[in-house]
Image (cartoon, rainbow, N blue to C red; front, side, top):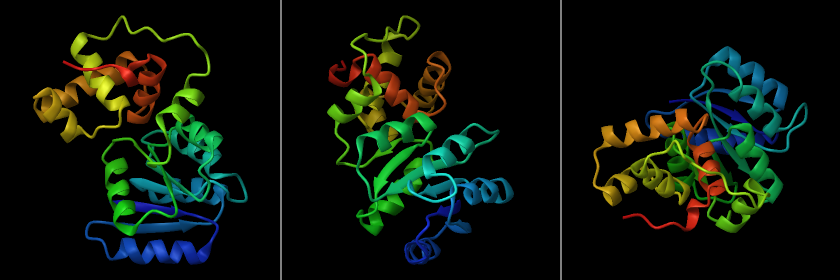
Length: 214
């Protein structure tokens, strides 16, 4: 896995790089200290994942995320920040980030998050509550309807919205990995979603967070 580190604090970048360099299968291909530099280096090095700070000079991390995810074959983006602010969560998800994690996380949790987001799943810091996401993702009282989604796909979307991993969804619904990937692929197309994080948004907008599955 090829990773680009984007943070304006050299000491923090150095600490994360040491952690990643010691992790099998992970290669840090570049480091950036500004939003503009992040976009340029990502185009040059084509990383699989960008570990992105929010507050950087030369264009913040969320603006850089939007630029990266709008391009062809975009990298996955994991936002890593000191600030557990509602607006940052909302803007990061809207920009196409696949995950949002705080810098006070443990090294093991960070490595897990990198692998989860790089694998196409969504991940949010535990402190980011369902109420917070629902309030900012769906500010309107109108509930999104899902007439194009089958009952089984709705069950899958419900579990994705709750934050379950693929393995957990397979176990809950007693389906194979291939079948689950087919359901997720169809949901992405039907809901015009870029990635799993946007499926979470769609699920909250449809009021699925509180639904039960059979």
